[in-house]
Length: 254
Image (cartoon, rainbow, N blue to C red; front, top):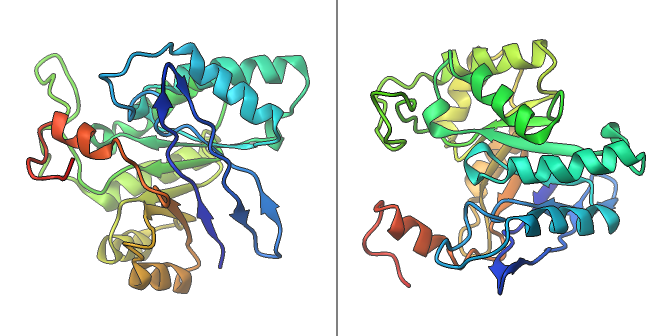
């Protein structure tokens, strides 16, 4: 089993670091990887920077040979990534099939009727016809944003992973996603999805590093032939600030 590692870029002094991370393949092959997770939405918003730096970072990474871009609807940087991708694709310097693009369904989109809506929004932002991998970003669902509900953090106690997964499968059938997977799910939740799935999850993306190895769930996924992506394997210094600012935790260390 291969474990794909990526780490969060940090926006510093008006720009964004491009972090080069090796990805171990099944046959010892090493692929380059670009991460856009914290270029924008997960960066410390007290720091100001030009949003165009995201496009510049994508340009530099593609020029260096990176071909995997990981983003999400809630990162609020899909449009900038899409601008860079369109420029490269239209120039003929790269073909769509050479890229591997991952994005994710937001927590307030964890409703069967909302899956297609948010994937279409992501595709419009990215200026693509399909993504290579579409993930459920979190297992806990929130109420969708409407005129009546403008708070994206209202817990939805009726979240049904089985019904949502059926809607995810429909996106594969429609050609909007080549493959589908999970993020921040535990073993019990993964098992429930797999037991009813017609199209099995190909990927689980979780926090995974030397201080939080999660060996049990990695072994669990290996038994089910689900690949594992580790996020923040080298740490994410701004995460505590972001969570505290969102009002979701009061006792995180600075």
